[in-house]
Length: 417
Image (tube, rainbow, N blue to C red):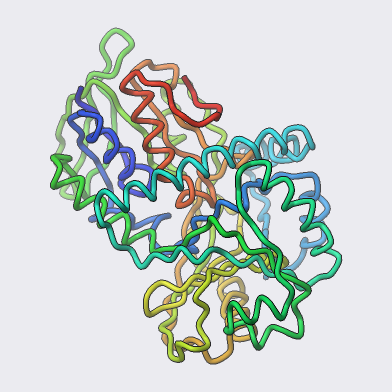
């Protein structure tokens, strides 16, 4: 079977890898000059199994209202004359109902735990290196009121097969000495023991290189502009390269793994994907004092900011901004991330040399990604992962390969079959 994959981010590259492993002949088409140069480029670095609860949960509406008017709010909703934005927001509120939140949390947890197993197997099989750490994630709570809910959260995670433990401020500081400056403000810490961290862009590059060595063809600097259809099936796609030269590729199946741009590609078939671009920010700063830089990845539960040590740099990421496809930087939001690093890990990294980045996360209202078939029987999706693209990458790619090759995916998840 010949399969075309549109997009060479985490979703596209993992799809290509597992399809090739299943015996398919695979071609990946990417509009950028290399793999992982958009949403996968500078994310927070976390493979976060211990946080399956979606943004849309019963506490979200009140939290969002509390943040309104703050330029540095963790979630910034910029109202636009955009029907898609309003539909997405209405769907988001509907997903905040308790029953829907529980359903979505279980689905995400099932795919996340499966994805981690697939990532572990991939690392063992290939020896791939991407500045990874298996030390886990420390969820930092600076409010006693918020930390009171951690035991209940632990029980829920345990029921999903996710290992965690609670730490006192002293225990957390002993485990992670870089938290010393934060110790007086800590109410407690939840340690996600099954979590990992690593450089998603480096992983993308390394896996693409291994896929290419295994026979996968990558075409960069090319854009899909049309589909060739015969009797309701896709026969191939039409491309434009960087010099606007046209080309045609034929295939038995096509996978859309184009992140926030996926809805526009399938709209011509009557598919309305509930995906909206949610802009996130990060900084990457060189470590200047290794003793002050954390060995564990960190999540600040109050600010929704994460920090991961990726080799010789610290990656600090966070905030969510609903503002369409606008990729212009917002200095106030970048500044809030810089301030967090200076306040929580003083002297660990060189702020002056920090590289600033923002990218668009393809978010569904439920945070549950879209994986599987469409109304065109040889057109498939692997998109809509929101903030969990790195966490769910390997599981999503493996499951999609199973669906395309006629096998039943292992995890209990609402795949589009």
